Every structure is written in structure tokens, then in C-alpha cells.
Amino acid sequence: TFHFLPTCSQYLSKISIMSSSSSSYYPKEVIDPHHHFLDTANQPFQTFMNKFATNVTYLPADYTRDVIEPLAKVDVKMIGTVHVEAMPDNGVQEVAWVEQMMVTMEGSSSGNINYVKGYVASANLTDDTIEQQLQQLVGTTSKLRGIRWILDCVGKFENGTTATHVATTRHDGIDLLKSPRFEQGLALLEKYNLSFDLQCAPIQLVETAATLFAKYPSLQVCIDHLGKPRTILGNDLLDDGSVNPNVTVDEAELKVWREGMTAMAKLPNVHVKLSMLGYACPGWMRTKERQEVLKSLVRETIELFGANRCMVAWNWHVNGAVSDADNMSQVGPDAVELLDKFLWFFEGYSDEDKDRLFAGTAKEFYRIG
Image: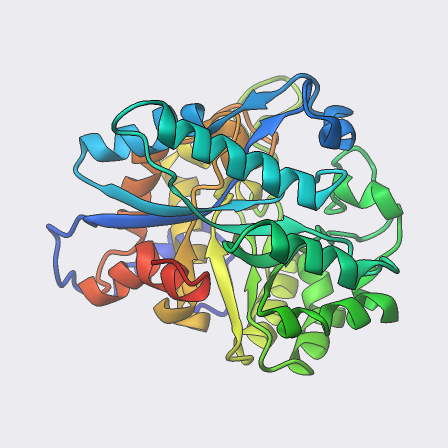
């Protein structure tokens, strides 16, 4: 584990410490444990999402075109995906909608398959009716695997200028991780054999999450999006529209992230998704220096948790830039470029570890297959 991340140049001697065991490795199979479908103009359960993603449509055929088919062209088979909630007004309705689309697509023509093998559904664990909601969700599909309620909160939402996520405007300024009612709902998940996808800010890992989830050692937990370190090299572009030349890492941000992730890694029931890399470093595809920083961050995460608790995720929706950076950059990798960058990040890892990162961990965690 690297103990400080001051400049890009200091990575170069550290990221190549292991010799490659199989430079010709290319995964034959992958699982995408995190992607979204949207139809905000037409679905009555997407009125909240439509407020800030107005008239956005992204459906199964789009994902097939953008992810599955390009990967197939380089002989990489997508053997299954996990659809993750996209802030619906009603989690049951969202799951039923996706399931019906997939069944319809599979039956429409030869060659189409129902590739969604699991669901992480939306449910506010503080609701009075949370147990009834969980019962409804379990009854909607046998593929229900987990629950997510987006929790990134460091204060009131300020139009994306802080780590507070727009989803938390549903309870603006209130950190639900600190709510006793949230814990009461969380405690129900094991009863229904459900995991929890944890999306929060790094400071919340430090202040609350590590202590909270240590109390539930049998509850399977997956930290979303690398634990969400934020803009560690600053914004992608300067105010004048030019590319930000900064190559000095925000040490304060990384210190908090590292403290939180180290604490979470000590809990054997906690996993992590290597995804939405552009949130940590917006516009990372623009320069080699940014890519070196991100490579080191990904490798440090794997060192903390081990390959058997890390999983690559494409987070695909709308397009590559949105999927990568959550609207903090206009550039991002396509599906094959992202695969190739991960292969570069994983230089020196054994084929067994890479198989875990691309498919095995997700298959085990979400019980796919």
C-alpha cells in the first residue's frame, strides 16, 4: 500500500514492482455487476430522476450495442449483469419494469438473451414500511440480490460542488448512515438473504460506516465506485476551458479515503466495486499522468481488499463519459477501452486474480450462475 500520493512522478517506480505473469491475458468472460436502465420521460416511477435527467432513455438494446457487442468483437463474453437501482420513486416498479423488458427482448428475436442475472433494488431503509417493501421486492423476482439507497452526504446538496449526491435531496442534509432507523432497516436484510450496496462519501466510511457494518458480520456489503474519492487531481478543465495541468494529488482527500477504506477492508464481509473512475479523476483518459495516478489508486484498493473482494464494474448508462465521471467530464472510455485500461492497471497480477476481478468476485457476491 502506498502511504502518500503527492505527485504523479513518484508513482512510476512503484506501480511496476511486480513482473507480469501473463502479458497475453485477456478475459474470456466478464460480469458487469453495476449498470442502469432509464426512461425518465415515460416511466411514472422515475419522476424524481426526471428532474435532473430530463427525457433520458437508456434501455437494454442500448447496453447491448454499447457494452456487450463491442466486448464480443474482442472475444470477451458478458455472461451476466446486475442491474442497480437508478433512484426510482418505487423500487418494486423499477425491478418489474426491467425484468419485463428483458423477458420481452429475449423473446423478440434469435440471439437476444436475458443478460440481467441479478438486481440491486431501491429501498429507503428508514421507511416505516421497509419490511413490507422487502417482501414485495423478493416476491417480484427470484433474481433480487441486494438493496441500495444512495447515502453520499456531507451536508446539504450544493449542485454537485461537494460530495453530497443529488439523491440525498430526498432527505436533504441528513446523513442516514447515522440514523437509528436506518440501522433497524439494515438489520432486516439478512433475513431476506440480501446484500447492501454502500455508496457514500469517504468521510462517512470513517465516521460511521466502519463501526456500523462491523456490527453485522454476516451481512454482505459492497462499496460502490472505489469508495468515491473525489477529484483527487482537481477538475478536468479549468474555468477557461483548457485542460487542468495539475499533477499533484489532493493529499487531504486521499488521507480520509485511505482511512475509511482501510477500516472497511478489515471487515471480511465487505467488498468493493472498481468503477466510476472518473469521479476520482475526471478526464483521466486525457493524459498519461492522470492514468498513472488512477492506476495506483485502483491497485492500492486491490491491495487493501484482495482480488477476492474486488470486482470490475462498467456502471454503464447514457454514454461512456456519464458512466465514468457522473457528469464531471465530457470524456470517458468506451467499453473496450475501459477493459484495456483495467488490464493495464492489473499488470503483474496472476491470471487467477484477474479472473476474480473481471468475473469471479461478482459471480460469488451476487450469486450469479
